[in-house]
Image (cartoon, rainbow, N blue to C red; front, top):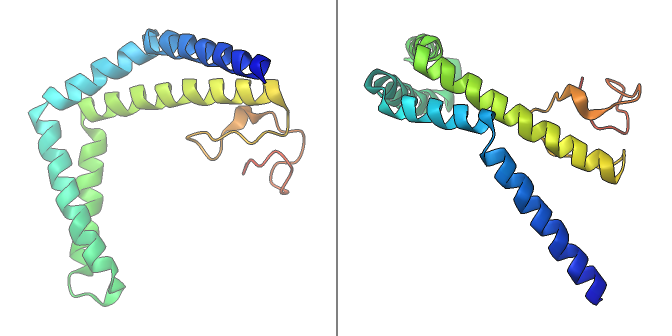
Amino acid sequence: MKIGTLERIEILDKAEALAKMIVESDVADEYRRAFWRLKQDSRAQQLIARFVKLKERYEEVQRFGKYHPDYRDVMKEVREAKRELDLHETVAAFKEAEKAMQELLDEISVLIGKAVSEHVKVPTGNPYFLSAGCSGGCGAGGSCGCRT
């Protein structure tokens, strides 16, 4: 039992070292910079606040669906607000940095999972993660569990 505990501590130490490497990576630096710029951009914050309010209205309208009197107007407003938000330079840059960070974490998760076993299910942020190493089972409910 003592060997298992020491082994576990060593694994956790290496995991902490890996986490430190990730935190100190260029990808993480860019993510933090993009996040900071997003928080400092007053126009981006206005767009986000507007979208959040519209989303609340959207959820209220969704309870009644197309029978709600404001259904079309709310749906149109939400789409327009989302488009404006997505096209804002600071928001788009943050989303790109966030995506890059998530891809790095997904790749690491898959590498660790595959090192243990080809059959280990690895949670990733992307349900259509292509690097999971499927062997012909994709789309047909293969044992890899991917959905592509």
